[in-house]
Image (spheres, one colour):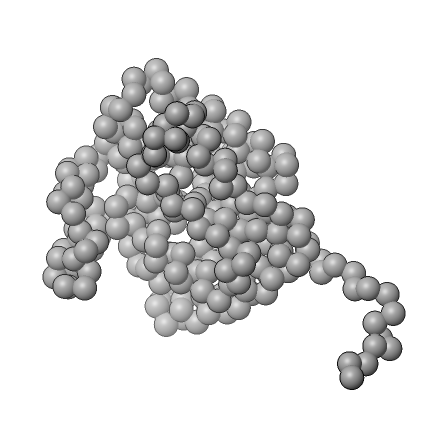
Length: 269
């Protein structure tokens, strides 16, 4: 079965209650087999990333979004394990700085878009401006509702200039979030990850779900598709994301640059 079952078709109306966060369609054999397959994919991704960097032509932007505790950090840590940090960068978007607030909301994001040969991973992204901003009513509805079209146009511009864009919504259940938050409290070396504000955000679960459904419905495009990744099981989340990345990079049909002519007779003294 193809990972395309998780891709949101352009114009689709997404209802997240119809997406099972514990689905195992790509690996019904279970965790051990899933981890084995992910290991193989990691090796492929490492080789493909080296090829991407060497060729120096294509660009890859990976967008990760999720509810709190959804696993963005874990995805980056496990999926991109072994890749060359020289060609892979992570951009995390926190509260905007004064300088960033002085510009339009996409300004700080565009600065981090990948250059030729690079993979850039957005840990949260420009979508916060139609998610948190909407849920907390930080700007009028008339303002954030225009941003879906802005974002589609922005991503189309990147794609037209040679950037391949993959967007992953790491879909966890409310019960799984409860367990992960409780685990942070139970383990002393994880308590630093917990803040009381997490509970206030959790209380807005339905509001965030509605906001994400709008994002997925209105901004999954042929040039920048969304994938709704079942993420209650971390090993399966990693498998799905790895599979999409590897298959997409293979489709770019990359080639190593031609070597300098006449190297066959070179002997290093």
